[in-house]
Length: 294
Image (cartoon, rainbow, N blue to C red; front, side, top):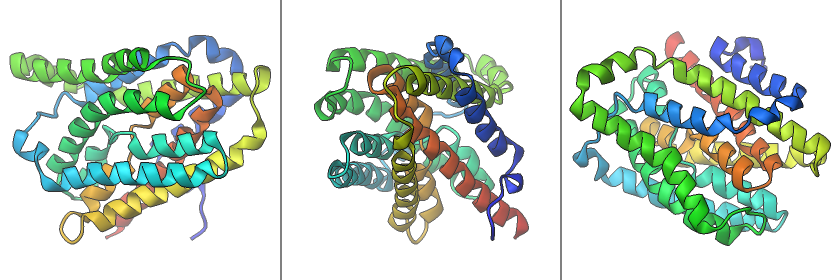
């Protein structure tokens, strides 16, 4: 079947539009500092109906998934390191980036076990908030900050919304339920963050030291990692949890990876996670369309 953007749901089409508009408006880079707060707000709103369950967090599938994330990260980093240090770092980030907060929603559409994917969101985001800052400075010579600075910033961006949402669920369930009514705001914050991120990247390429020729390589890395993450996740979860593990491993919190690239690495590298956004949404739209036809 021939691909057409018109076949995608409206929300997936809006992702393409946000990135395209941002690339055409490099002047918007001055507002890129807002991405951090958009990521925090998105995570907080998305976790308001995700109660931590110790039983689920200890699920053996989740820990195998974490081990696989590390294995894919090491293998693809070593592979792409033979080509380019930047491509290797993009591959590493796209492997270790935690599960997207939208993954439980997609899993619900696919009629899978939402609780498992929700536990993956909480576990992977919590652990990677600690792991990524520790490893990133060791892999990148272009990092603009030391381990402590990255750790502090990442803990604020990920751990603060995670802890705050869980505290609110337990201390004020009525308020947390009221706030879940505006959960759709997360999607529009995502669109805004994508627009600002692509604007910052466009400005870097046009006026700083960027290179448009690097785009095909980044797109290829994102495509390889997207196929690998979803495919390996599907294999890892067989026979009973293939769909859930595929979503947990494949659908990534790409905005976190984009923020890390813009804040601590080369802003041009943010295009890698942006391409991943497009690929994962095309794939998930295809899956959801198949379920609806069935």
